[in-house]
Each structure stands twice: as C-alpha cells, then as structure tokens.
Image: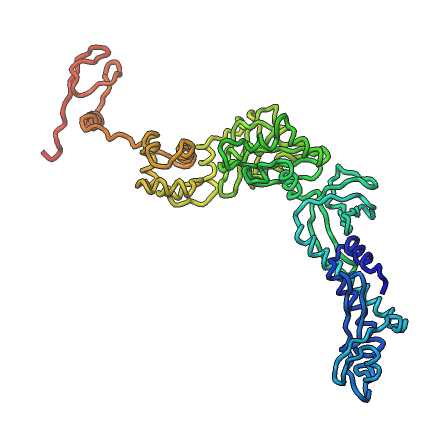
Length: 485
C-alpha cells in the first residue's frame, strides 16, 4: 500500500470530522470487501496496519498441507518452506496478498462501499456532535441564499436559517458573520439537517447568558421572555440575592450590557423588568416603559385586569398597533385593558360598585367563611395564619396591624396583602344598635295618642289640652262611653 496512507487518514480526520479508529475500520472493510469479491469469501483474510497506520497489508491465513485441495485456505508444504524454512505440515501461515491482484471490479465495488461507509460515519459523527448542542449558540458565515432561506457555513457542516426564523430587521451578505441558536438536528436521506433560529425567545436567553454573568451563574434568573421578533422583547427577571438588582445587572453600567444585546438583535427594542409574584405589581412592571397609576382586578379567576395610566401615557402603554400591551398580556398571562385616568373616572369603577355590578351577572355564590377561600391568599400565608389559630375570616378581620405583626413569620408586605384582600373581597356590615326601651315606649305612646283639630282655627290639638295653643279658645272633650255599658 502507499506509504502516505497516514497523511490520507489525517486528512479525513480533519476535513470530515471522523475519528482515526473509524477511518482505519473503513479501510479494513474496503480491503476485506475486495478480497471477498476476488476469492468469494474472506473468512481467512487478515488486515494489519503497520507503523501507527502509516501502511496497511492484507494476508490470507492458510494451513500447510502435503496435498492442496482448497488453494484459498491451504498451501503446499514446499511452497510454505520457501516462505518460512522451519514450518511443518499443520501449521498456519499468513501469506501477504498484493492488492494489485484484485480485479478492477472488486476494487471499484470496495471503493463504493468504503465511500458510503465514510458518509454514514461522518453523518453519525456529526449528528452525535450537534445533537448534543441543540439549544446552544453557534457562529457561522453566510454562504448562500435560496428562496429566502440562508445556508450558513458551520465549518464541518452546513446549517440552514429558514426565512421564518430570521428577524425582519436583518439582512446578510456573502461571508457575513451570523450568530444563531441550534433549534433542530435531523438525519435525512440528503444528509444532516441543522436548523438555526434567531427569532425564538430562547435565542434571547442564550444571548443574555453570554452578556450577563449573573444570569449564567444563576444569581439572577429569567422568569419569562416574550417577543415579537424585530420589534420588541420583554424580559421578566428576578434575583436570588437581596443585594443584587436584577434589572440593573441586566442593563449594566450606563446600559453597556443591554446595548450590546440590542446591537446583536439589530436594534430591536428590549424591556427588562422585575418579576413580582403579586399580579398587580407585575402588571404595572409589564407595561413598561409606560407609567401605571393603578391596576384594578376585574375577575381574578379569568385573569382580567384594568390598568389605569395618565392621559399622556395611553399610546405608550398600548404601543404601536397594540404591541406593548399585547406582549404584557403574554408576559403576565392576564388579559389587560388599558384606560386613562379620565376614562376610568367616567367608568366609575370602585371596588364596591364593581363587586355589586358583577353580582348582577353571575350565579349567587355560597358565603365564604375560611381564610383559605379568600381569592389571592397564598397558601404559605394561610399556613402561617392557621398555625397561629386564625382560620376564619371573621377572626382575621378582628386582628389589628400590631396583632398581625406579632404572628411569627409574617412580613410587612404580607400584612399589606391581607388588608388589601379583605378590602377587595370582604363586605363588613355594621349591626344597628338596638332601640332603647324608654324611647320605644314613648314612640308607642305617641303613636296611640289621637290628634284633633281646633273648631275655631283648625290647629292640631290633643285630648289633654284645655286651650288651643294657636287661638287660645277654651277646649272641652266629651269621652264616649263604651257601647256595651
């Protein structure tokens, strides 16, 4: 065999990404196939690599006999002694086969099989390599475009960036650098298919992990990302450490970090906001950059809320073609209606009237008595109250702020949540004081005392009067006796 076999092997390893062991195995299979094509079988064929794969040889293992019956597996003793002088009948001998003895058809058939084996090995090797990289970032270079789809040179293989996964802001030219996320890796009849994306929310997450070390090391975590590719992205983040501001860390000093991300996304607007477990606060944050004065929960079970903004902030809160409020809806998973202060005043929505109006259009509900039945009460807070013996709503209402503070584990924020929950969901009816017995008697007596009119002036008089209080005429009343007397 050619002495430069090792160079050919190294070239296959570098260019095709195939391991050296697999290349050697392919060469062995190639020689074994050629041997079988010439001799009809290869049970006794042996392939050996010499000097770390720099050369290769194929041998026929033959048994030494006195009279040859099968010249493929047997060799005459006289011929064997020409090769090895001290051999004996019954010994096995490896006799090297010159590959040039293989006929052209055998060589061509073996080559074809070897090429197919190399393609399959390369496909399997690259598939294993890139399958483990799904969801990771990769950098390639613009190679060509077809029907809006971009083919990206990834070095060992070609990736595809479909038109639907391209941002509308982006345009590319030959050899432009493209950073994308590996979305899918599949093996097909036409080879390996690696699908890339620059529009998915996870693409933004990967960029943030590269630009913000606090996200990579889990000091800051991303709650959710929603995106309209090419237009706007909203990112809700929170910190696992009280001394780290999640929004400030993502924005960076003087906005350095966020500007780097915006440049990578070709100028797409990005809102980084703080996640809050309390829906009203989260809705306020989600409508950033607009200022929100108040949030009214219309129907908690259906996740419907009303956000009230200053008159001048309405267009900013809604966004162009409703983009800002639409992204906010997806981020908080609530249906948010945005109104200005003047519109809100005209609607005359207060917690009491809102509740009364809602009652007109829904089925009567059973009266709730226990604190765990209150809407919006976190289970952890309910457990804290119950551990202190507070299980009924009426018991909770009777507690003062000082008494709530004294309960172990309850924070000031939770006290505010309790008070707000009671204000929004509990109607406190004050009982009317029982009427005084003396006043009741007087009323009864007054009701039974009959009134008359003065015969002179018509003023109101009673039977106990002797003179009219108006004209002064003397009065006299005759008492009618009972008819039975």
